Length: 124
Image 1 (cartoon, rainbow, N blue to C red):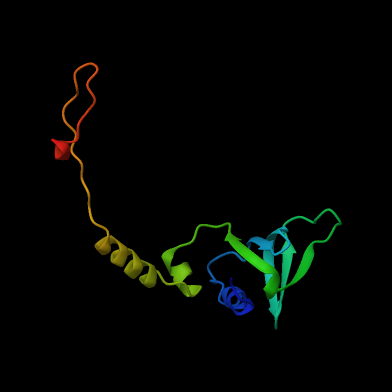
Image 2 (tube, rainbow, N blue to C red):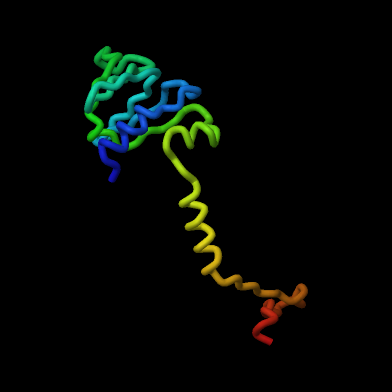
């Protein structure tokens, strides 16, 4: 589970080249589409793109209630890195898995005659 420090870090390091908009999903499964945000200690103030059913355009959230943040703009590798993300660990894990996974190949004979199933070459 992501901690409030992680969410605070994401919003405080938001890439300057990326519009300050996106989608939040809270622990109560409320989806909030926002077009701007501000930080204050443990609180996040977001401005909704459109008011909710009660007319509220601004929402103040504690970072603890955020479950998901979705980016609505395409991200570049530079923007991802400036937000604090690194692909290096993922690449190393993928290389480890790839190196540990044996490659298995099965050859199949030419098209069988009518009523005869195909037999892998290894079983002959």
